[in-house]
Length: 278
Image (cartoon, rainbow, N blue to C red; front, top):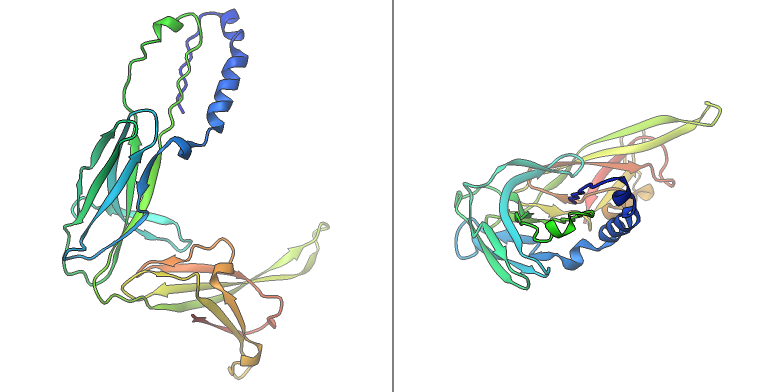
């Protein structure tokens, strides 16, 4: 949001404070997407060769103003917490046409994205495509007419992010449990006294396959293990991954993900084994 205020004196400014505050609050409460351009699809899957190596993204300017948009693509992966991390610019891997576009109110436009990178990938690559609205310099024709008042300009720029997967034929995910660690800490009361232990499981999974996998329909099978290492299958607990709090469940090929699981109330405290099921 950009505000430009032209001051002409104490009395002039004070007389317009109420109108200025009301205008700014109203502008901030406006739903940005209700008057924004749109960008779709959110996810596209390409092959590194053949007739499915390109896709068209559609833009629709639903605003009452001119919208200038630029398109960029970055290779990405996700860290242990599931946060997207940029690896590098992907200019050498894609042809984007047009990469910059200006749309009048009500205009629709198509942007072609074509893979021009290695046609024989060993595994899937993931990219973030960004449609970024850029400001258009304009001269305010009414600026001189408002010389004795307060000039306020509010500019809302909309960015969209989508995902592009370039997936070789025959690619498959292969998600395994890499490690399981129990984390415990003393629970403190208001008097600073220990009131027992809170336990969590830190489970790290790795996708050793060649394509991404949405894990929301998978489950952790947590099984108690006795002193001899034998699993007590009758006491096993299945926990659906989508029920794990604060979890992003899309695991890219080659990535690892940390799952922090509160110790289930009905799971005996002690040694356990964790496996993945579908």
